[in-house]
Length: 210
Ligand code: HEC
Image (cartoon, rainbow, N blue to C red; front, side, top):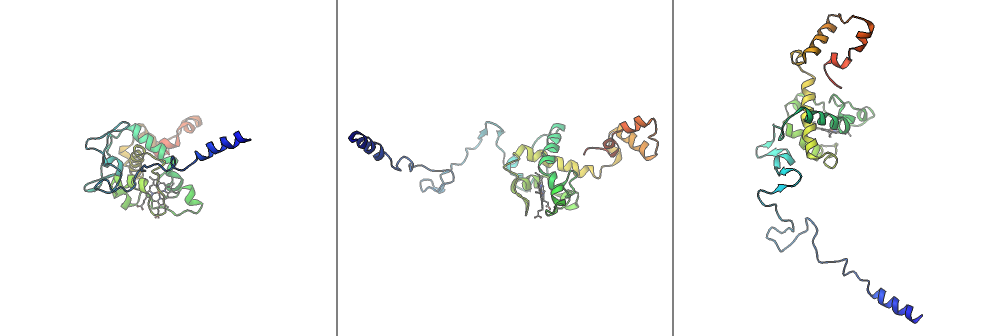
């Protein structure tokens, strides 16, 4: 018993908060040590990200000195648009709808209806505006920054531009085979066999997916 008490004495006196409360700072803590009053140290000029290469303010904020940017800060390619379409369909279509008209399923169930992306105001909005709204949210729409990384926000913004264009695209801009089908459908000459007619994808006649 005596040994047990001795052991308890040794073990219990070892418990204190001094290891828990160490002298340390957390990110964003205030510090009188540095002139700017914060413990955060600014990045050195020319800092390069290991995962993203050059660190660019425009890429992460959608803003340049003159305000929201009107050009994508990355190269546009079909792969970017396809990625944007996929991400848009996952994260945005539940409210904004696949076509961007603002009548997605959640809105049909009673959520606030956002302005259609085909509204002249949003057609005229700079591409950086869409990036900015995804990043920070807008009114009753919450931010998607935690779920959609910056690369994908730009891909979605580019895809929204495509959606806006698609709803008012001149027929002459459609691929030739789609134009032909459209013309045949217009003249009512998609006849052939029933099987042929059935095999004509509706999306091809309408000029795109979805
Ligand atoms: C849960 C529903 C919902 C989802 C999901 C959603 N939004 Fe929204 N969004 C809204 C609503 C509602 C508004 C309007 C908010 C208001 O007026 O208070 C809005 C507004 C916007 C606006 C501003 C429109 C304007 O009038 O200036 C943009 C741009 C936008 N959303 C883009 C997106 C994008 C891109 C995504 C996908 C990453 C997305 N939204 C996902 C509901 C949603």
